[in-house]
Structure formats: structure tokens, C-alpha cells
Image 1 (tube, rainbow, N blue to C red):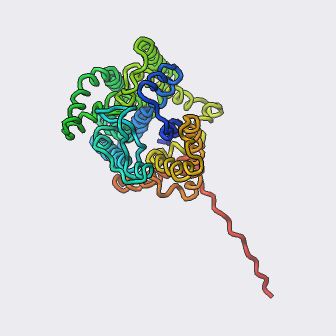
Image 2 (cartoon, rainbow, N blue to C red; image 1 turned 90 degrees about the horizontal axis):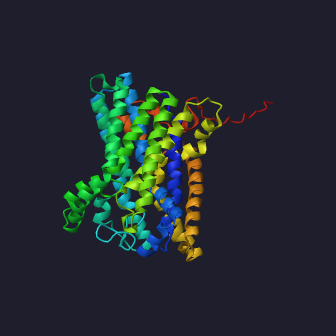
Image 3 (cartoon, helix red, strand yellow; image 1 turned 90 degrees about the vertical axis):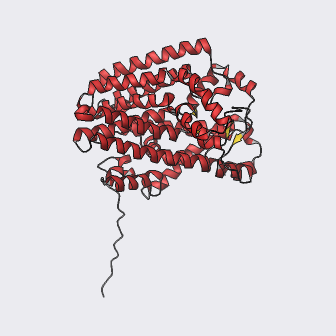
Length: 444
């Protein structure tokens, strides 16, 4: 099956938003809890915060791309259910491992922990970023390593869980029952999202007590389910909705039918979420990094479903469509193909430049939030330059390149499908070869 470039576009848009919103990490004048609650009272600020917490889109995209790969392999007979399960397990654990290394070494400094939450809690450092910021060695805390989940953790868990679901549904040629599978996955996704708030209320006190009492094995288990930032609830629900779109892509389902179902589901979530937001408002600032409240949860997944539906519909539009051409933008897809590398090393690049160069040249610049977000935009341009230069050596050394080599070795599958440059420019891409100038020697 040909690579579906619109997924690289989705991933690229998401990482660009992340780079911009991560400008907030370079803002050194953090408001207090009361000040933050006043900021949240502004609807535009609240909307910006909802978007800033939108890394769940990566879980949905992971579910989507994973389902395309696994469903296509089952349909072609290249993999059985067990193979699909093992593939998802190995890949997911690999991403989680990278995520844990990133948290320990390169993660942005976070504020707050289970006992003293954001924004009045202590600074939680990673080894390298914290050491650069403070000028002395900082070790990651137990809370950072065990009780807090990053987007990479959610992505890895999404790959594992969608692999399990697809493997079970694919048993005994079950992948052929497309309608049944879509219904089952849709029910699972909706259930996980809708029970997130009750599960948070039930399990978070246990998670909190485990942290306070130093029961870290128990705390780690409950962190998977409802730990800070990106746990199982609700993000595996997002991944399963993504898997539904992945099945639709692999089966090339009618775009009008997908548009009707997707736009309806998205509208329902957005409507209910907006009503709940009008009734309950935004959560207290101390809950910003906790499992999403229902109103944010519904608004986010509704918007993500709409965005995915839009991309699906125009992916199958006529080739001359301007929207379809925009969805194939090389500028955006270049970021989408190197997402993992950017995600892991973005804090290192941004913090090093800020602390060692900008703060020396213009002390105090980062106390202004506008300058911090301008810096976030500038980092996008810097990463674009990095990627263009990296492209000249076929992105060798990126985490995606390393991942492709390891995956091809373990699965014994053709590595050419993971050629990043070819995926960027298309399957018909032929590398340009510089012609050597002919030197004519006169024979006398």
C-alpha cells in the first residue's frame, strides 16, 4: 500500500503547533495560582490553553498509522493476528523507552508534583536541561520518572493498545468484517473517553496516596491509567478513533460516508463539550496537568475527529484540488516525518540557545510572554533549516532513521519503505546526481 502523505501532514501540523506552544516553557515570569485562574477566566486564554494541551492528537495519529500498517498486512496475508500483536508490542515499548530516556535527560522543566501541583509547586528537572538552566547538576525526580506521562508515553501505549485490539478483531480472518470492527472500536473509544472523569475520581486518590507513601510500584501502575498529563484515560480512546480512520484509509472507504459519520461524531462531542464548559468553566489552574476534565476532553476529541475527517475527505478528492495539494505540502510533511527527533531534542536546542546566548545578550527578555512565543516561532524556522541540511545526508542519524534500521533488522522487512527522503518526495523520487565536469586533455 502506498504511503498516505496526509498522515505525515497531520503529524507535521501537530509538531509545528507543539513547537510554537512550547514557547511557554521559555517564559520565566510564571503567574501564581490566583493569577493563572484570572487568566483562565478569559475565554481566549482558555482556548489557547486547550490547544496547548492538545498533544493527544499524536495518540490519534499513532492509532491511525498503526491501523493502516497492521490492517494492510493482515489483508495481504503478510501477518497473522499474533504477528500484528507482537509488532505493536515491540514498537510501542521502543517508543515508551525513548520517552523515558527523554524525560530523564532532555525534558522541559515542569512545575509541580502530586503533593504540590502547578503552578505553585517545585521545579521538576531533567538531567541535562535542568543542569543547563541552573548551572549545577540536577537529577530527575521520582515524580518525573514514574508519576508523569509525556506524549511519547501516550504514543507508545497507543501503539500497543491498538495492536491488541486489531489482533483480537483480526483472529480467524476477522479483519474482513470491516463494519463490525469499526463498530466495536468505536464503542470502545467512546466508552474510554466517557468514563475518564469517573475513573479519575476513583483512581487518582490511590495514585496520590502511593506517591505520598513512597509506594512507587503501585504508583507507577496507576500512573499508566490516570497519572499526570497523558495517561491511558482518555488518550487510548483517541488512539482507537484514530484506528477507525486507519481502517477507513486501508479499505479506501467512500469519503462521503466517512465525512457524514465523522462530522456528526465530531459535532456531538463539540456540542456537549461546549455546554459542559459553559456550565462548569475551565478547571482550576492546579488541575491543568492532570487527566483532562470532561469539557476539555470532549472539545479536543471532537475537534480532532473533525480535522481527521477533513483530511480524509480531501485526500480522496480530485488530484487538481487546491486543498489536496496543500495537504501534500513538503514544508509541513518534512516536520511530520522527523517528529520523534524534534520532540526529543527540541528542549535541548531551545534551552541551550536561550540560556547560553539570548539571556547573555538581553537579560530579562523571557519575562515577557510575547517574546517567549516569538522565540517559539523562531525555533520553528531554526528546525526547518536543520531539517533541510539533514535532508542532504538523507536524515542519517535521526531517531527515525535509527528506528527504521532497527525495525527492518528485527522484522526482516524491506528498509526502502522507511526511506525518509523518498517518503517526502514520493515513490518516484530519483536522487539528483551531480555530473562531474569533463576535463578535456589536448593531445599534442
